[in-house]
Structures are given as C-alpha cells and as structure tokens.
Length: 167
Ligand SMILES: Cc1cc2nc3c(=O)[nH]c(=O)nc-3n(C[C@H](O)[C@H](O)[C@H](O)COP(=O)(O)OP(=O)(O)OC[C@H]3O[C@@H](n4cnc5c(N)ncnc54)[C@H](O)[C@@H]3O)c2cc1C
Image (cartoon, rainbow, N blue to C red; front, top):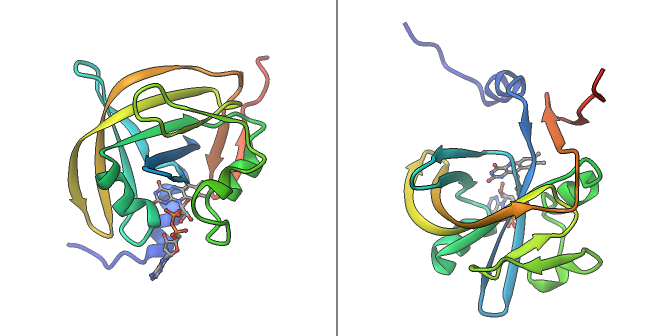
C-alpha cells in the first residue's frame, strides 16, 4: 500500500536528517555563480566521487553542465549569513554576488571557494542523472582541502545550528 506524500511532510521528515551546509559554485567564462546546497554527499572513495542535487528551476542547474565542473565549499559555523545569501533569489547574479565575501578560485575548476569555510572539494562533472524535479550531478573530486574555519554550520529541522562544544 502506498500513500500520497505531501511535499511539506517530505520536508518535515527529511528535516530530521541533519546535514552540513555548502555553497556549490561554478564559473563559465566571466560568469561566477554560487548557490547554497545541503543535498551533497559522498558517493565513492576510489575514484573519489560526490554528488549534488540541484533544482531544475535553479540558475545553477544549467550552469554546471555548461561549465563541466563545480566547486563545493563546506560552510563553517560563522557562515550562516553566506548560506542565507546564496539561497536568496534576490541576490545579484554573476560576480557581484561575491562582493564583500572573501573567496579564491578553486585550483582546477576556477569556481569560487569561500575562504572561511571548513573544507572544499573541486570537481570535474563526471555524470548527470534525472532526479525528479532535481538533477543529480556527480563530480569527480580533482582537488580538495581544509579551509580556515574549524567548526561546521549545521542544518536541522529547517534551522541553522552549530555543534555543541565537546563535553
Ligand atoms: C540550507 C539550504 C539548503 C539548500 N539545499 C539545496 C540543494 O541541495 N539543492 C537545491 O537545488 N537547492 C537548495 N537550496 C535552495 C537554493 O539555495 C536556492 O534555491 C538558490 O536560490 C538557488 O540558486 P540559483 O541561483 O541557482 O537559483 P535561482 O535562479 O536563484 O532560483 C531560486 C529558486 O527560485 C525558483 N525559480 C527560479 N526561476 C524560476 C522560474 N522560472 N519558475 C519558477 N520558479 C523559479 C526555483 O524554486 C529556484 O530553485 C537550499 C537552501 C537552503 C537554505
């Protein structure tokens, strides 16, 4: 027996699945673009693969296949404002959305990595799959590293959290 799943119930249940928060970014010629994403996970160790699920309606959706690459910044506890910013449809598109934010180009893709994140993953687009109203982009990690931040930003039940200090 199956039941109709309302999107609000789906969000409510999945909200219990605690995640980190990232900014996925890509660059195509002079166009820089970033978006907040938590549908990011590891796929394979050898080869090193991750995936990111992107809404078909998001500006980022068509940019990733065109760029053929993307970079993921795992956000730090101090970066709630950046997460809100890169999830806002009101932010300007292009380079201006990075004004006032410290970033550097990822080594291979050249996509923006936010300096105060906790880690970054620089990816070559390896595959793309249909995922309902999202697409599943699989990235082969070609470079990665820790960044300046120490503690991660956490997303739980639709709210930003930080880790409790060690007891
Ligand atoms: C904690 C958190 C995690 C998130 N995780 C993800 C994630 O994993 N994957 C993901 O895809 N998004 C995720 N989002 C949402 C995403 O960050 C925002 O939607 C962001 O604005 C997308 O950036 P964009 O510039 O690519 O899309 P924009 O072009 O800014 O579009 C933003 C949204 O506006 C709507 N929209 C835009 N154009 C149209 C149109 N023509 N018709 C109808 N609607 C339209 C769509 O819903 C679209 O997703 C997350 C947001 C938060 C706060």
